Image (tube, rainbow, N blue to C red; front, side, top):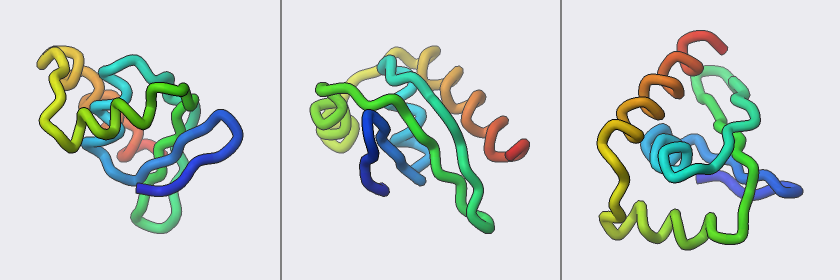
Amino acid sequence: MNGTGQNRYETTDLYLGCFLKARGLRLLDAKRDGRRITFVFEDRPERGDLIRDFYNDGTVRVNDFKNALQDLKAIVYNV
């Protein structure tokens, strides 16, 4: 996990990124640094709760997670 910026949240964790996207955080950007991709999301007050949900087996609809995973993996290969 990386940190935050002004109304932005960044992470290099693909699965956390998928979870956040599936739970409604808007993806703003993806940046490559060598082999690492940083996903940049629009930050919201409930982001901390969402991250706790992710690490505590929070729920997300399977299709939403699958679609988010496909989207972020496509970005990984195209950035």
